[in-house]
Image 1 (tube, rainbow, N blue to C red):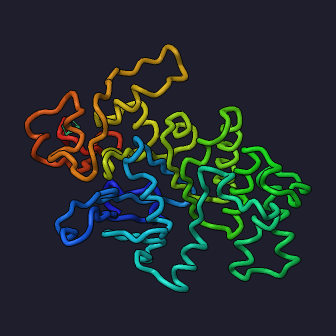
Image 2 (cartoon, rainbow, N blue to C red):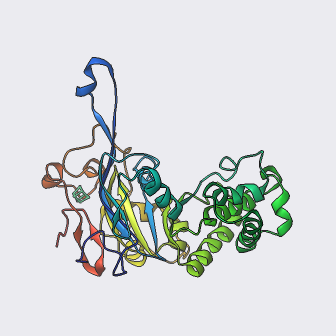
Image 3 (cartoon, rainbow, N blue to C red):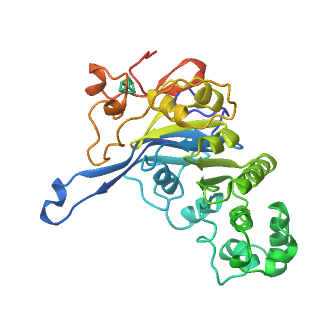
Length: 332
Ligand code: SF4
């Protein structure tokens, strides 16, 4: 594959997303056709290799969770293409969609809300196997026992209900359920943000171990750059529905090129008290996706904005170090 913002390190990506968009009509009635469209996701492209973790970061409302839902096919895209192993699944239905969903699983943010309180943990974890009619009842039980061990839960946990577990244990149940169908890709939307800080590292380490042992790919959505630094191979920074910078974790953290990424990094806590990061203070709120600014959508908040930024939308272009940024400054 040629050098492009969607290129993952591996020769053949597991997942490819090109020009993905999701627009929502607002308003209604007779004027509906003329009503503005909310551009939640507006032309997002990337790819993901087996065993790779791509983190989507950005402020609340930037569209990162919507990207996750689109890839999970929980909502229909307005435009764009989703491929897995080169097969277009953008409009897959019926058995094709069912087969795709078997390969692409999800870990939710709130482990308590995502578990049926009336079901025992073993039933929750074994449910996907039953839904897909896989294995005999005895084999399913064995598989569930294996999954419990894999996520660090004791066998006796199988007979307990969700309320009997801690937050971290509940998230382990959610992870075991996501693993039940032996997926290739897991979309994890803020999977540790609801957990105590002391438990976050344990769950993150578990996710890393599982990824490395099983060759899983993660699309990991997070607003927490400390978490992202721990788990990412590559990072995509989103602003108002678009990726504004994407590249390897080290480049994004150590030498960000887009002023928005620089501002995010400047605002993040630094583990090393001697480390210095250029201070760029983000002023103002994120503009409405109903009426995004013309040109570069970041220009009203950008300390470096110049005339061109107000009229011409920058596109992702290659920068040194193999990453891509959408900014008129220092364009290659
Ligand atoms: Fe700032 Fe202009 Fe770059 Fe946008 S294109 S981030 S406004 S310098």
